[in-house]
Length: 317
Image (tube, rainbow, N blue to C red):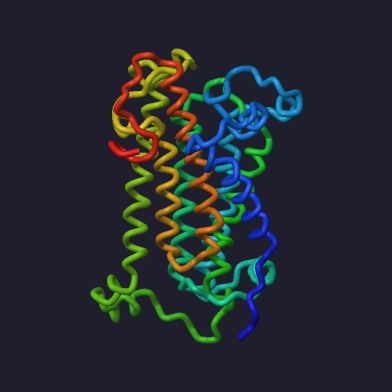
């Protein structure tokens, strides 16, 4: 058996994860109060709308609305990854760049089947398409900012989520056999056995759809706070207390749902430590930090903020 080779991209992920956990975990649990410089560097949007004092951080500030660039880029990457994986595993059809991608990933012992890999790629494509729609037609951004490090980390994340799944799946090699027509494959399926063997894919898909629905609902609620009743005219860009949906239980359900979306993909890729220690841990750490900071921001800025709202889990935490 060939020895596993880990691509450079995984080392980059682990370094980013380590730095995020090193800062985010003790901060989220309120074990430490980080220096203002680090707060300005890691936070964005309303949690740091006071004027940035550090000249270096101020120099690399960009508008928070540039988030949308992630998703345009993500659609391109995800579409290509779907084409490569489905073309190879289902249609036995070569896609330009397949050999380069296979060489870049290296030789690893597969722990995921081809269908888990394809599902991850499809889920990311759906996520990016939905977020583009929300950014263009739903969201009303304030004048909040983020620094360019967040911007670059976003591109790192959306460049590599599918790669982390592909590198733990079967090799992207074409078969010498003719592909079996999908109609013929469906006729031979034992659905009881299918459910038993793929329970994690079914559970992951259901959680993904549930979290995606409430993620979208939360963004709709936030946007409508700044629009008129028709939803066509922006009235202001101020922050007010959101109400309705999951906001009745959580201070930042959009961040919680983002975590659940990646946990759902992790369930699909349940045997892949690469995927769990890469995009899943990265997203959980980042979004948990923002959940905590958003919760504190609302409580510090609104005297009438509902006391029953939690950071991460309704009624519990």
